[in-house]
Length: 272
Image 1: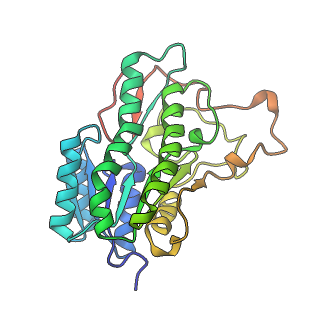
Image 2 (image 1 turned 135 degrees about the vertical axis):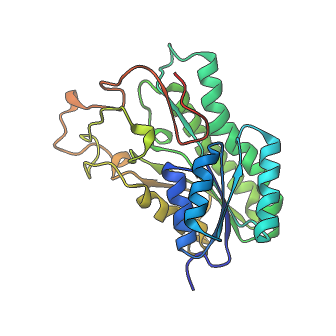
């Protein structure tokens, strides 16, 4: 048997980047996946590549009706839903004093409120198919602060808190809820950013597949006693600074960036 035999997952923001990697890993490990995204062209292309164990549905995580349709579609196509991966997200390059209301609302609406709406929409289906798992994609920005990313950091800390509340409430219904916290991963979200890895013990960016391995573990019954917890895949970034780092020369994601843009994990189109 493969690790996810019999499991049906819904992955948001699944048309590209980490979401596409998660969807691919789920199928490779014997599961079925519904990919939810607003990028219909990429989503359909990925499904064609993954084969009969994958489906695509248009899903804007900010819209309750889209969530209801996605849950219903998963059940109608595969008979159940066992796993929800709240992966859709947006990164806005703006600090506390220059983040506009519109920018704040966009980031919070997708990253945090979108995950909340997904959990709420999926609970009944997940409970019917228990044991089930919800995997919320946070970030190392949900474990520590980053200058210049006010809305993003707040949303990722919010995901961490939402995860713990949901884990406590949903445990009696056979649903586990955990958050994963990737560091810098090689996806289009980081395109255009000059990134130093002085603050990362492994001194590199991660590959999406390295995060997907964690998703597979949390989706499987191997993690049956894990709920309400944080799992980092960050090359040791959250552990602390390497001893050779010059503290006065630490670079962050904010260094030498081009004009301000919204960089997405494919839940919306990039916005200037």
